Amino acid sequence: MSSKLYATFVLDDILLGVEATMVQEVLAHQQLAQIQLAPPEVVGLMNLRGQVVVTLDLRGRLGMPAKAVDPSMVNVVLRTPSGAVSVLVDSVRDVLEVADHDLVVPPVTLSPHMARYVTAVHKLDGELLLLLDAVGVTEPMVLS
Image (tube, rainbow, N blue to C red):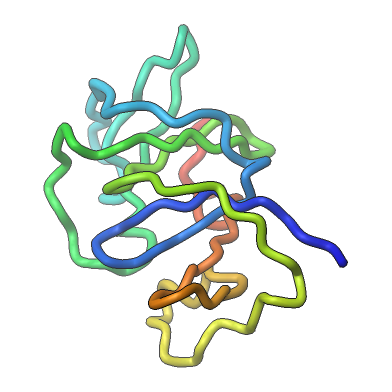
């Protein structure tokens, strides 16, 4: 039986996850430099030990209502083929091991924005875990 580890986090009341191997690190809210004329999902750049990292408001990418960035938010830094990208989330949860046979196809009721990036769903007690394509949801935001 094959399984994978997923790092989970929350946006509003939605539990989302990415493969744990994609997560470089999790940081408390960081000071961000603003980028003029950037897409609305790009909230700024952060300095991560000398590396410039784009910070993305995941809500915008997933078609969720905007929320003002506040110091309680958490930066999840993801590794992508083009470099590190940070996504802002409300809170971080656990790392869960999920067997491949426990994953189901995303429901057709997802919004088109969210359906574009949700690859599978895992049913937990009382909630659903929506698994994201971490590369797909961040790739257009990587700056060269």
